Length: 454
Image (cartoon, rainbow, N blue to C red):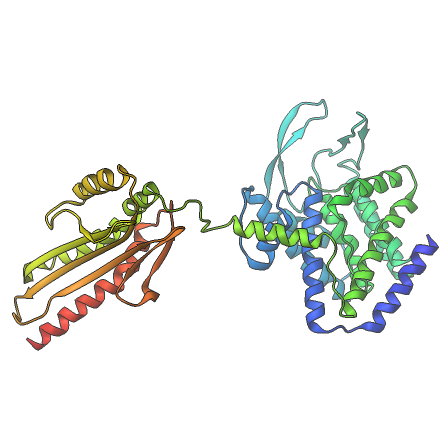
């Protein structure tokens, strides 16, 4: 034990001599510890968010993956609790007390929830987990060997928590214990009481790091991959060997100190498995929104026409149909090109209904014959303004280009007006209306301006 404490003290002095580190190095280090602590502490308790999903959530504010909403909420809440203990460690006026510990538990659990439980006689049941309140039911556990491990009883919990706080304040004032010893014993004693219905492990690790931060030491991360050694050290403490757990926590602090020293020297804080984490994050992002899950085939192209493209044409037509009484002519032009075939072909007549077009053209001519559309052009014309016979025609043109992996819908000649979409994606009708609204509005403004000059 003295050897561990001596090494920690030496590393602490080395780190202090290198501080303050450059802001960009500190920022990168803080991000790494923030992600490592939140991910691992929650993962130890069964949270299923991956490291990449945790980073997307905490750093970029995005959610992905198929997880229970509560898992996202608790990960964010745990991040908030981490900030709480950092703030408390800087507060010299208010000592650690039971109210703060209850607030910490309430923060990480977010809100009351129902949880599967086992009655004292071994029956399955469901229990409402209250947050921030000491337990109302025994929460002893059955070990893998069948033995029952007893935590503090419901009646003894408030008494033992009061004693724990008094012990901590006394030891903090005496300053006789090494910070590692004080932090580890606070962690173990808290877990041994298990005062809450849920969140005891996370609360214990946060309290342990409160001690480290208050003593100007970096926080300790218990890696979920090292869970077996962590539990073994706790079990050894249960048998009376407290030094085993103190030694284990000391080894984790050495890792933290060495990583801080590397950062303070401007060296990389990446670890061997960090590249795996980066790959996992990239995969998570690639599995997010707007994933291309289909290529251009006759079927996927026809689906795109029916789902998104023809609805755009119909929106344009609907708006201008109501104005055609003020013109001598109203005409729809719909033409297309087939990949591998020369020339442009027209679709139906100006009086064909959209249902007829979809049936006769898409179903029979394209999908049925396994042909690929390459380009579709739609135009709606209003010719011969009755209030100004010399007026040119007013028209709106929509063009569609089918590419190998996506397609574009564009109005006008400005490519910035294009809507790029993957195949097998349906767009909400409101989004389609918003997309073509500027083109419709532009034609309406031209009609209004000509009317003023009439």
